[in-house]
Picture (tube, rainbow, N blue to C red):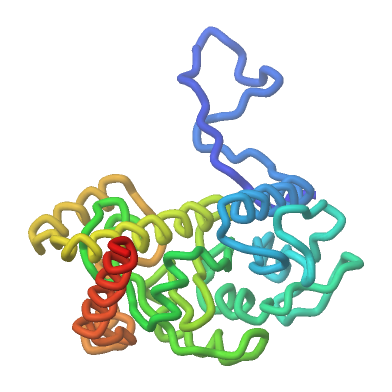
Length: 290
Protein backbone atom coordinates (compact mmCIF):
# COMPACT_ATOMS: atom_id res chain seq x y z
CA UNK A 1 0.00 0.00 0.00
CA UNK A 2 1.36 3.43 -0.92
CA UNK A 3 1.27 5.64 2.16
CA UNK A 4 4.03 8.22 1.67
CA UNK A 5 6.50 9.41 -0.93
CA UNK A 6 10.12 10.48 -0.87
CA UNK A 7 12.10 12.36 -3.47
CA UNK A 8 14.41 10.14 -5.48
CA UNK A 9 17.50 11.83 -6.96
CA UNK A 10 18.21 10.15 -10.27
CA UNK A 11 21.55 10.46 -12.08
CA UNK A 12 21.74 12.28 -15.37
CA UNK A 13 20.17 10.08 -18.05
CA UNK A 14 22.15 8.55 -20.86
CA UNK A 15 20.02 9.02 -24.01
CA UNK A 16 21.49 5.81 -25.45
CA UNK A 17 20.09 3.73 -22.60
CA UNK A 18 16.45 2.64 -22.50
CA UNK A 19 14.42 4.57 -19.93
CA UNK A 20 12.40 1.54 -18.87
CA UNK A 21 15.40 -0.16 -17.30
CA UNK A 22 14.38 -1.99 -14.10
CA UNK A 23 14.92 0.22 -11.05
CA UNK A 24 15.17 3.38 -13.13
CA UNK A 25 13.14 6.40 -12.06
CA UNK A 26 12.91 9.78 -13.82
CA UNK A 27 14.25 12.91 -12.19
CA UNK A 28 11.74 14.34 -9.72
CA UNK A 29 9.92 11.03 -9.38
CA UNK A 30 8.99 9.64 -5.97
CA UNK A 31 10.01 6.43 -4.31
CA UNK A 32 7.27 4.50 -2.53
CA UNK A 33 7.66 4.20 1.23
CA UNK A 34 5.64 1.46 2.87
CA UNK A 35 3.71 1.84 6.09
CA UNK A 36 6.01 -0.76 7.62
CA UNK A 37 9.06 1.36 6.74
CA UNK A 38 7.46 4.40 8.37
CA UNK A 39 6.92 2.36 11.52
CA UNK A 40 10.62 1.43 11.41
CA UNK A 41 11.44 5.14 11.06
CA UNK A 42 9.44 5.90 14.21
CA UNK A 43 11.26 3.10 16.04
CA UNK A 44 14.65 4.43 14.91
CA UNK A 45 13.84 7.99 16.01
CA UNK A 46 12.59 6.63 19.33
CA UNK A 47 15.85 4.76 19.78
CA UNK A 48 17.86 7.89 19.03
CA UNK A 49 16.04 10.19 21.45
CA UNK A 50 16.28 7.51 24.16
CA UNK A 51 20.00 6.93 23.61
CA UNK A 52 20.70 10.68 23.58
CA UNK A 53 18.96 11.12 26.92
CA UNK A 54 16.12 13.20 25.48
CA UNK A 55 13.61 10.86 27.15
CA UNK A 56 13.69 8.52 30.14
CA UNK A 57 11.58 5.51 31.05
CA UNK A 58 8.35 5.72 28.99
CA UNK A 59 8.56 9.47 28.27
CA UNK A 60 8.05 11.11 24.90
CA UNK A 61 5.96 10.37 21.83
CA UNK A 62 6.38 10.35 18.05
CA UNK A 63 3.94 10.37 15.16
CA UNK A 64 3.83 10.42 11.36
CA UNK A 65 0.91 11.49 9.21
CA UNK A 66 0.59 8.95 6.41
CA UNK A 67 -2.38 10.37 4.50
CA UNK A 68 -5.29 12.79 4.84
CA UNK A 69 -6.92 10.93 7.71
CA UNK A 70 -4.39 8.46 9.12
CA UNK A 71 -1.56 8.87 11.62
CA UNK A 72 1.00 6.42 12.97
CA UNK A 73 1.87 7.03 16.62
CA UNK A 74 3.85 5.52 19.47
CA UNK A 75 2.03 3.57 22.19
CA UNK A 76 1.58 4.70 25.76
CA UNK A 77 3.56 3.12 28.58
CA UNK A 78 6.46 1.90 26.42
CA UNK A 79 10.10 3.01 26.41
CA UNK A 80 10.90 4.78 23.15
CA UNK A 81 14.25 3.01 23.04
CA UNK A 82 12.75 -0.48 22.86
CA UNK A 83 9.77 -0.36 20.50
CA UNK A 84 8.85 -2.94 17.86
CA UNK A 85 6.68 -2.48 14.73
CA UNK A 86 3.68 -4.24 16.26
CA UNK A 87 3.54 -1.60 18.99
CA UNK A 88 2.93 1.31 16.59
CA UNK A 89 -0.72 2.38 16.44
CA UNK A 90 -2.71 3.72 13.49
CA UNK A 91 -5.37 6.31 14.33
CA UNK A 92 -7.56 8.75 12.44
CA UNK A 93 -7.45 12.53 12.95
CA UNK A 94 -10.10 12.23 15.64
CA UNK A 95 -7.94 9.81 17.61
CA UNK A 96 -9.96 6.67 16.86
CA UNK A 97 -7.79 3.56 16.61
CA UNK A 98 -7.87 2.08 13.10
CA UNK A 99 -5.38 -0.73 13.63
CA UNK A 100 -3.02 -2.00 16.29
CA UNK A 101 -3.47 -3.74 19.62
CA UNK A 102 -1.59 -1.20 21.74
CA UNK A 103 -3.11 1.93 23.26
CA UNK A 104 -1.98 5.17 21.55
CA UNK A 105 0.12 7.75 23.36
CA UNK A 106 -1.70 9.75 26.01
CA UNK A 107 -0.34 12.90 24.33
CA UNK A 108 -2.04 12.09 21.02
CA UNK A 109 -4.31 15.18 21.22
CA UNK A 110 -1.25 17.40 20.88
CA UNK A 111 -0.11 15.65 17.70
CA UNK A 112 -3.54 15.59 16.06
CA UNK A 113 -4.10 19.29 16.75
CA UNK A 114 -0.85 20.08 14.92
CA UNK A 115 -1.82 17.99 11.88
CA UNK A 116 -5.27 19.59 11.69
CA UNK A 117 -3.81 23.10 11.85
CA UNK A 118 -0.89 22.65 9.42
CA UNK A 119 -1.16 20.45 6.35
CA UNK A 120 2.58 20.80 5.63
CA UNK A 121 3.51 19.00 8.86
CA UNK A 122 4.01 15.25 8.35
CA UNK A 123 5.69 14.30 11.64
CA UNK A 124 5.78 15.38 15.29
CA UNK A 125 8.32 14.59 18.01
CA UNK A 126 7.82 15.32 21.71
CA UNK A 127 10.67 14.78 24.16
CA UNK A 128 12.34 16.13 27.29
CA UNK A 129 15.87 17.13 26.17
CA UNK A 130 17.54 18.31 29.40
CA UNK A 131 18.86 21.75 28.44
CA UNK A 132 15.81 22.80 26.44
CA UNK A 133 13.52 21.45 29.14
CA UNK A 134 15.51 23.34 31.79
CA UNK A 135 14.68 26.58 29.97
CA UNK A 136 11.03 25.50 29.78
CA UNK A 137 10.94 24.67 33.49
CA UNK A 138 12.64 27.94 34.44
CA UNK A 139 10.18 29.86 32.28
CA UNK A 140 12.36 31.20 29.47
CA UNK A 141 12.02 31.18 25.71
CA UNK A 142 15.11 30.85 23.51
CA UNK A 143 15.08 34.20 21.77
CA UNK A 144 18.74 35.18 21.31
CA UNK A 145 20.21 35.23 17.81
CA UNK A 146 23.51 33.52 18.64
CA UNK A 147 23.93 30.47 16.38
CA UNK A 148 23.58 30.47 12.57
CA UNK A 149 22.29 26.88 12.52
CA UNK A 150 19.55 27.64 15.04
CA UNK A 151 18.60 30.89 13.33
CA UNK A 152 18.31 29.27 9.90
CA UNK A 153 16.42 26.20 11.09
CA UNK A 154 14.22 27.51 13.90
CA UNK A 155 14.55 31.25 14.45
CA UNK A 156 13.57 32.03 18.04
CA UNK A 157 11.79 29.32 20.01
CA UNK A 158 8.69 30.33 22.01
CA UNK A 159 7.66 29.20 25.46
CA UNK A 160 4.04 28.06 25.53
CA UNK A 161 1.81 28.24 28.59
CA UNK A 162 1.70 25.24 30.87
CA UNK A 163 -0.99 22.67 30.16
CA UNK A 164 -1.89 19.40 31.84
CA UNK A 165 -0.55 16.46 29.78
CA UNK A 166 -3.13 14.45 27.80
CA UNK A 167 -5.67 17.32 27.90
CA UNK A 168 -6.64 19.96 25.34
CA UNK A 169 -4.68 22.56 27.32
CA UNK A 170 -1.35 21.85 25.60
CA UNK A 171 -2.74 21.98 22.02
CA UNK A 172 -4.49 25.25 22.89
CA UNK A 173 -1.24 26.69 24.26
CA UNK A 174 0.66 25.76 21.09
CA UNK A 175 -1.86 27.10 18.59
CA UNK A 176 -0.94 30.83 18.76
CA UNK A 177 2.64 29.99 17.78
CA UNK A 178 2.08 27.09 15.38
CA UNK A 179 1.71 29.12 12.15
CA UNK A 180 5.19 30.62 12.53
CA UNK A 181 7.25 28.01 14.39
CA UNK A 182 8.47 24.43 14.06
CA UNK A 183 9.86 24.13 17.61
CA UNK A 184 8.27 24.88 20.97
CA UNK A 185 9.28 24.87 24.61
CA UNK A 186 6.38 23.54 26.69
CA UNK A 187 6.37 25.27 30.07
CA UNK A 188 7.30 22.82 32.87
CA UNK A 189 6.99 19.95 30.42
CA UNK A 190 9.51 19.58 27.62
CA UNK A 191 9.84 20.35 23.92
CA UNK A 192 7.92 19.74 20.71
CA UNK A 193 9.17 19.85 17.12
CA UNK A 194 7.39 19.31 13.81
CA UNK A 195 8.72 18.54 10.36
CA UNK A 196 8.27 17.37 6.80
CA UNK A 197 9.19 13.84 7.94
CA UNK A 198 10.11 12.20 11.22
CA UNK A 199 13.86 12.69 10.76
CA UNK A 200 13.33 16.34 9.92
CA UNK A 201 11.40 16.74 13.19
CA UNK A 202 14.15 14.86 15.06
CA UNK A 203 16.90 17.08 13.64
CA UNK A 204 14.99 20.16 14.78
CA UNK A 205 14.82 18.67 18.27
CA UNK A 206 18.59 18.16 18.18
CA UNK A 207 19.12 21.75 16.97
CA UNK A 208 16.86 23.06 19.73
CA UNK A 209 18.77 21.14 22.41
CA UNK A 210 22.14 22.25 21.04
CA UNK A 211 20.98 25.87 21.02
CA UNK A 212 19.72 25.63 24.60
CA UNK A 213 22.97 24.06 25.82
CA UNK A 214 25.15 26.66 24.12
CA UNK A 215 22.92 29.49 25.35
CA UNK A 216 23.22 28.32 28.95
CA UNK A 217 26.99 27.83 28.76
CA UNK A 218 27.43 31.26 27.14
CA UNK A 219 25.44 32.83 30.00
CA UNK A 220 27.75 31.13 32.51
CA UNK A 221 30.68 32.75 30.71
CA UNK A 222 29.19 36.21 31.02
CA UNK A 223 26.54 36.29 28.33
CA UNK A 224 26.13 35.52 24.66
CA UNK A 225 27.01 38.03 21.94
CA UNK A 226 24.04 38.23 19.63
CA UNK A 227 24.38 38.53 15.89
CA UNK A 228 23.40 41.86 14.35
CA UNK A 229 20.09 42.26 12.48
CA UNK A 230 22.09 42.57 9.27
CA UNK A 231 23.78 39.22 9.85
CA UNK A 232 20.47 37.62 10.76
CA UNK A 233 19.00 38.84 7.48
CA UNK A 234 21.94 37.31 5.60
CA UNK A 235 21.18 34.01 7.29
CA UNK A 236 17.56 34.31 6.21
CA UNK A 237 18.78 34.75 2.65
CA UNK A 238 20.82 31.55 3.05
CA UNK A 239 17.65 29.80 4.20
CA UNK A 240 15.80 31.06 1.12
CA UNK A 241 18.55 29.91 -1.22
CA UNK A 242 18.62 26.47 0.41
CA UNK A 243 14.85 26.18 0.00
CA UNK A 244 14.33 25.26 3.66
CA UNK A 245 10.64 24.54 4.27
CA UNK A 246 8.56 24.83 7.41
CA UNK A 247 7.49 27.55 9.80
CA UNK A 248 9.91 30.34 10.72
CA UNK A 249 9.10 33.53 12.67
CA UNK A 250 11.24 35.74 10.44
CA UNK A 251 9.37 34.55 7.35
CA UNK A 252 5.87 34.56 8.82
CA UNK A 253 3.10 36.68 7.31
CA UNK A 254 1.21 37.23 10.57
CA UNK A 255 0.84 40.83 11.81
CA UNK A 256 3.81 42.05 13.87
CA UNK A 257 1.65 42.60 16.92
CA UNK A 258 0.47 38.99 17.05
CA UNK A 259 1.73 36.70 19.81
CA UNK A 260 3.54 34.36 17.45
CA UNK A 261 5.64 37.16 15.95
CA UNK A 262 6.90 38.53 19.28
CA UNK A 263 10.24 37.11 20.51
CA UNK A 264 9.53 38.27 24.03
CA UNK A 265 6.16 36.57 24.32
CA UNK A 266 6.13 34.12 27.21
CA UNK A 267 9.70 34.97 28.24
CA UNK A 268 10.74 35.36 31.86
CA UNK A 269 12.67 38.33 33.23
CA UNK A 270 16.20 38.34 31.78
CA UNK A 271 17.70 40.06 34.83
CA UNK A 272 16.23 37.34 37.06
CA UNK A 273 17.82 34.63 34.92
CA UNK A 274 21.24 36.33 35.02
CA UNK A 275 20.99 36.78 38.78
CA UNK A 276 20.08 33.12 39.23
CA UNK A 277 23.03 31.95 37.11
CA UNK A 278 25.36 34.30 38.99
CA UNK A 279 24.26 32.87 42.34
CA UNK A 280 24.72 29.30 41.12
CA UNK A 281 28.24 30.08 39.90
CA UNK A 282 29.12 31.69 43.24
CA UNK A 283 27.88 28.65 45.13
CA UNK A 284 29.85 26.28 42.91
CA UNK A 285 33.05 28.32 43.36
CA UNK A 286 32.54 28.53 47.10
CA UNK A 287 32.06 24.77 47.28
CA UNK A 288 35.28 24.19 45.34
CA UNK A 289 37.28 26.35 47.81
CA UNK A 290 36.25 24.22 50.78
